[in-house]
Amino acid sequence: MYCERHIGKLEVIIADTSNSPSDMIFVSRKSTPDRKRNLHSRGQHLRGRVSIFRGGFSLIEIMVVIVIIALLASIVGINVKSYRDKASQKKARADIAVYVTAMKSFYADKGRYPTMSEGLEILAPEYIDQISLDPWGNAYQLEVPGAEGAFDIICFGADGGEGGDGVDQDLTNWNAGSEDQQ
Image (cartoon, rainbow, N blue to C red; front, side, top):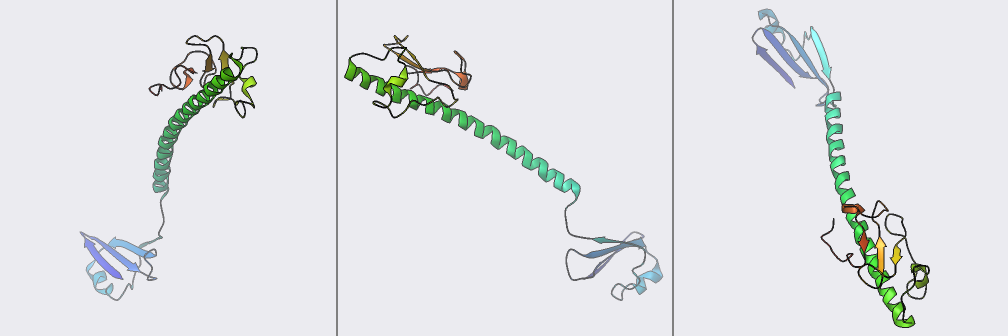
């Protein structure tokens, strides 16, 4: 491929030297009438400023791509964290529901609920396979008598302490079924 353009007094010649789109010679120089005639013989007299362009990416292009990837990764990371928090709360609600069922089975067999000193541990292995920790690594708490009934099973949320909003909110057997909590 051979291409010659005249832009004012500037002469631009593009010559493909290897039949590869990535290797091209670009020549620019001032145009004079006698040079125009000699340049028509397939790139002879390609003297002047010569640059060889190789296919690839500039540093700026690579940096822009890295910034875009970083922005997308941060957006995905934020969304994944919120889903993980919601899943942890749902697991805590499900665990509390299982413990409530085990407590009712214990009451049906023994005619009483476990005392606070016996704790939830008395339910295993007869009424439940094992007593697990909440999704945040804290133990579920048992209060007998409870604030809203014969007993309360409490998960203190992500902060491990009483109170809180969102993922730190306390879950109990009397509010664990409420899905409107964040």
